[in-house]
Every structure is written in structure tokens, then in C-alpha cells.
Image (cartoon, rainbow over all chains, first blue to last red; front, side, top):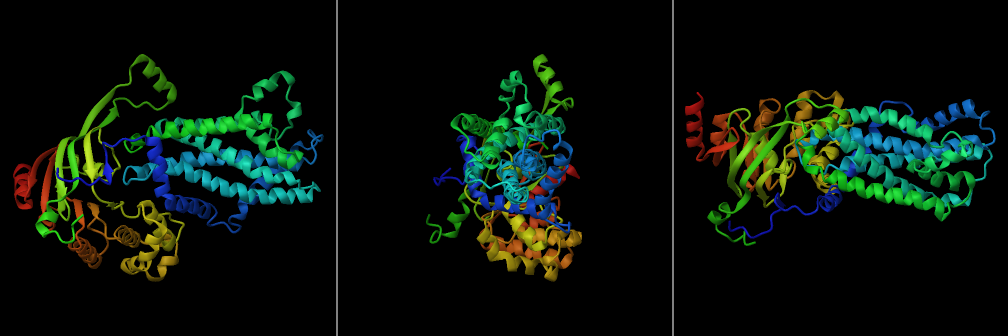
Length: 274
Length: 256
């Protein structure tokens, strides 16, 4: 063949799929924005209150939990702020990983017809959940004002916490959505796992009720560290110490790297799975 | 690139798509394995059995720049698989595919539309799925609305459209830009007769502008009329490549 020019596409050119995928996400950043926009706009499209539900939803859950548990855990004051500060991170994690699964299942139909970088569904799921997370900080601040809690200056640490938990949720979402494509049972099973996981994480109960000899066990749970790192600057009014921060950071980076490598090692197979 | 002052004959001979010894196998599990537990047990017992199905078998061919290249063959001959291999959807198990240009896939019309979003919002979403950017879509937006003949409906949610309307919109989005390579899979029958003529005119205009077209259709007569060359695929292998009239005659001779 006399064609010396470099081809736009060459199936034999197999540079690292993990790096190639990063480049494709950059090329498809407009699609990323469009998918996030679609998911936020269409979720409440027909409802009267629309996006306000993103804020009302955690408020409602917090209200119920406060009424049910405030007597039990009345040592934790103000209890609504305690719950809400943990619930917001938890919702972010469970929503984004679930959206990664349903996004890839929907996208699977697309992937058999046209080329789209498959990680885009996991990344856009995180994007949507991030918007919801930012929106749900509004009711958190409202509740703090209403319950008379002081809004501590340490709240400026939140962007760091959000960044760390984003890495963890993205990596985990990529792994779980990839598994769910190959084994449909995974997405059903994951709902049960999520419920158990939530109760194993100190979200609605204070850490102080955990028996001393179980504490080592609790610390193996990455979400324990994510919730702690998010809650300390809001509820306790202090920046996490290095000892409280590094486990979250390590979980985040490790999960993200492993998730990205695992998911992209299978990129060629998604289109073969009809 | 000396395309501008090169004589026409030379442009035609420039390959834009090259398939070299391409094979695609689907691995079909001979039994359904639905759960991880089952899968793990089978892997341990080395009992995961697959039937290998060759959708394409050692296919080699070249498509030249500016050509209208048709693919014919019976159902299951590998026509759609070939389009997928060219458009980067499937990576071949063997051999290699090289493409020297940007490919505009024609998404099954309306796939990817969201019923709750308006026509306007769906134009941008669909364009993004096809790989276009914001400015690329903004520059062709008015033209898409005009071509799809939607008028005021453009602000209404797609769920209120008739199937003809959303197919017209899908066609208009997918063909809004003049592509280097256009892939067509049996979609020349969109909308009423007037719209069909309009879409045929648009595709012919692409050809005049130098776009390369790869098409699949069961309408053999229209393939003869539109294509410069045809390939006949049979059970994943190339039976014949050449002049449309001759290839169709040979194909008909065997199948009728």
C-alpha cells in the first residue's frame, strides 16, 4: 500500500488501552456534558418541584431518621446535622455507583452500534452525582442555621473531601458496572450489599457506640473513612488529622487506578456482549 | 498532501479504508451462565464451553477515497459486522483495519433520543453521541431544523413526535456534516416519498463533494444504481468484488 500518511484509526495499533481511553474521554468531553445535562434534566422533568427534589430528598430522610433515633442518640447534638453530613456522602456514593451500572447497561445498546468511549457512562454518572452533592449542601447549611449550629470555617476543607470521595466512587463504579455487564445478578446483589454497607458505616449512629474490639474491623471499611473525612469539618469543626486522612486518600487513589485499569482492559469486549 | 492539484484519477486510487486479513469471531457460550457463582464453578471445573462463530473470515479489501462501496449478501453473511469493524465498534480478533479519515456512522435513526427532552435538546445530545462538539452542532442547528421539517415542534418533547418525525430528525442530525466517510446500513427508507427523495439527494450531494460512502442494502437495483463497486459476502468470506452489475448478476444467479 502506497499510503504513507498515518491512519486516523488503526486496529493493530494497541497502545495502552487505559491511556487511549483517557484521550478519548477528552475528545468526547462535549458528550460528557450532554449526558450529565440529560440525567439531571430528565430525572424530575415531569414533576412540579423539579430539581428541588434533589434537596428535599435528603431533608426528608434526615427528618424521619431524626424523629426515629433522636432519643436513642441524644448525646449527639445537633443530631440532624450529624445525620445529614454523613447521609450526603453516602447518597453520593450509592447514587453514582448505581448510575454507573444503569448508564453502562443503557450505553451497551449504543456501544454495539457506534463508537463511544465506554468509560464515559461511569464518568458521567459521577458528574451527575457531583451536581446533586453540591445541591444537597444547600439544605445542610439550612439545617445548620435552623438548629443553631455554628457554621465552622473548616467547611472550606470540603472540596478536598469531595475530590477524594469522587476518586473512590468513580473507581468503584467502574468496577461494579463492568461486572454487572458480564453478570446481570451483580446489580441486584449490589442493592442488598449497599443496604448492609450503609448500616456498617457510622452514618445514623455515633461512632462511640461501636464496641472497642470491633473498631479495628470498622476501619477496614473505606466508607468509614470517607464519611469521617466529610463530617469532621462540618460537624466537629476541625480539619481531619493526617492519620484520619491518609486511609481515605489511599483507598481513593488505589480504587481509581485499579478501576480504570480493570474497566479499560475490557473495552473491546463490551461491544461483543449484545 | 497534494490532493488539490492532483489529477482526478490519482485521487480515486488513494485508499481510505484497508482491511487486511480481518476475522471476527463471536464466542457464544453453549449454555447460559447467569450468575457469578455458576461461572466460578465452571471455570474451576474448566467447563466454560464456547461455540465459535465466525462473522468475518479473513477478509481483505480496499476502499478508495471518493468511492461508493456497497456490501451485499444474505442475512448473517457479515455485512453489519463489516460496518462495525470499519467504524471502530468491534475490534477484529485477527488482521487489521486501517482508516484514513473521519467516519460518520449513521446511528439507527432516533437511537439515543431521550423522550422527555425537546427536539432541540436531543439534536445536541445525538450530535454529541456521534462525536461532534458544541460549535460543530451550533453551526448546523438551523439547517437540521429546516431539513427535518419539524417547525415549531422543535421545542416539544420527542415523546410527542410521530415515528416519522423522529426518524426525520435522526437522519437530519446524522447527515448534518459532510463526512469523509459515511456509513449507511439499510436506512434509505425514512419518512414519506418526498422526504426519501430529499435524503437520497443529500447523499448524492455528499458523493459529489468527495465523501466516501459504504452502504449495505437488500435493494439490489438501487445498489447497482448508486455504487461504484460491490463486495458480495457469503458466510463471512468475500465471494466477489467488482463492478456492481457483474457482482449482482453472480449473486442472483446463485440465490434465485
